[in-house]
Every structure is written in C-alpha cells, then in structure tokens.
Image 1 (spheres, rainbow, N blue to C red):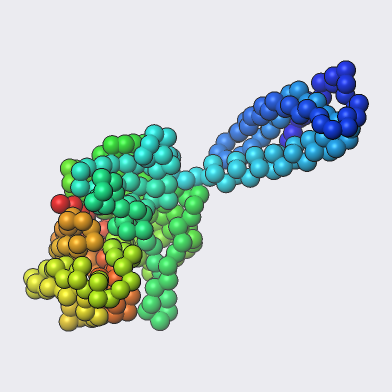
Image 2: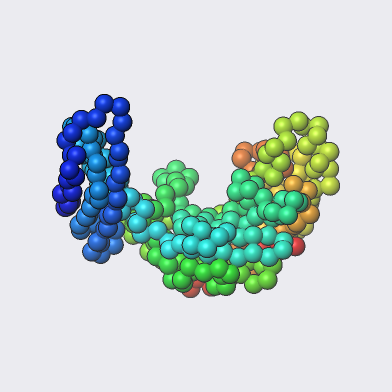
Length: 329
C-alpha cells in the first residue's frame, strides 16, 4: 500500500549536537482510487530531513504510519456514498442551498432539509431552532406499533446535481433492511414544495414512508415559565382537518394533539405563528390524497416543540405525485 522514498542524507547526518537540531520536512502524498471509496495505492514522499541521532529517525517512522492510517480512514469514511457537496460559503458541505430574505434553507448530505428564519440581528437562527424536514421509513411490528429504520450513510443517490441557489432537488436513500425511498423538493420564491415515496420495501414487512416536519422549541433559551408566557402570549397555531373542521390551539396548554378530539382524521392545512421565529410564520398545506398527523411528545405544550408527519394515501403514493407545501412569510 505504501511506497516511501528514501532519505536524502546531508554531510552532518548522524552527527550528534548538544543543544539543538534542525528539523525540516516536505510532505507530499496522493491517493489513487479505483471505483468508489476504495483506496488502491498511497504514496508518501518525505522531503529533506535533517536529523540528530536515532530520535528523529524513530519519530519519522511513527509519523509515517500515523499519516498512512489517517489517509486510509478518511478515504474509507468521508468519501462514502453520501450526497455530493458544495464548496462555496455559506453552503460548504451541503448538497443544496437556497436563501430569501425570510429564511435560509439547505439540504445536508444526509438528506435532511433545514429552514432557518431570521434571528433579528441580520443573520439566521442556529440549527437548534431550525425547522427540519426528514425522510422517515418505519416498519409495522406485530403489536401494531412502528419501529424506525435508520438511514444509511452510504446509501444515498443524487438525482439532481448539488446546487445553490437550488430549484428542483431530488435524491434517493436507503434504510436498514434495504428499503429505498425518494425525496423531491422544489424551491419557488418563499415556498418549498415537498414530496416523497417508498420505492422498494425490500425485506421490510408493512413499511410506511413519512416526511417528518420538526418544529423544535423556538424558546429553548428561555427557562423561566413566567417570562416564556409573556413572550408567547400572542403565539397561535391553527389548523384545518381533512373533514373541514377548524381548530385553534393554545400553545401554552398541555394537551395530547394525537387524540381524535383534536386531529380527527388528519390535518390538511396548518398555520404556525410563533414570536420565537422573529415575525416569520409558516403555512403548511397538503394536497388531496395526503394528510398531516401532529405529535407533541406525549402531551407537552406546543410551545416546547412538535412534529408534523406527512403521509400520502397508499394509492396516491404509488406514483409519487402527492405533495405538500411550506410557505414562509
């Protein structure tokens, strides 16, 4: 695997010096890969080396093997089949990027979409407060509950090139058990249109595909309940169910939103207006043939965060046509 060039001796090589020595090295290395993420050969070239006795020689051998191990580790991990990445700031390391005055959004190399509203100081909120959209594959167990299937880091396939500003973004992923899914997003002004479907169930029995929209705690920095109540006094979350019933939620009230009294057969439209998002509100709407299901961690107040699971009806999902939109305004 490794070919090491020999030393270039000097006239003083091997001559001990009492107080100091000079150490000067030039490093050149390269990786030649065949196929994806497979290191075929590594060449390490050591330049000029002024050494004193055996200590520097021993140090050189240690450094040489540490360097080779690091190169092999990086080539087998970082270059795995993740989504391609952009190099230009502020999108460095992401697959797609998009920015408007009301938000900054990107898709990372693990297929997760982030939406960051302004922070009120000329920038955008940190990832911790960002709204996230994640593709989720679950498998039904014998008791009727569902188990989450982990997305594989090396199971991604980009259908569109890495881009910023992005327009249409499409990619596929794989979960444990071999099931494959597809995600499609489209950035259009202040609107993001999202869709996805399960492509191949593979070894999974009774799987289901979900696009999970996560609204984290926008007031994570506020621990005082009284101050939180003041900040969130005008917050509101309203939604329209698929049966046409309109519901307004008290964000400070602890309630189980998964109960039939609230969510009913599912949610078609929802408006989220929280002061923690600095004057930005989110309007989500699903087309017919799909719906949202809301959850809030077993009855916590919505002000502490919640999720919206979007799922298409089986018949409609077969063609991958159903979509939902997020309007940021």
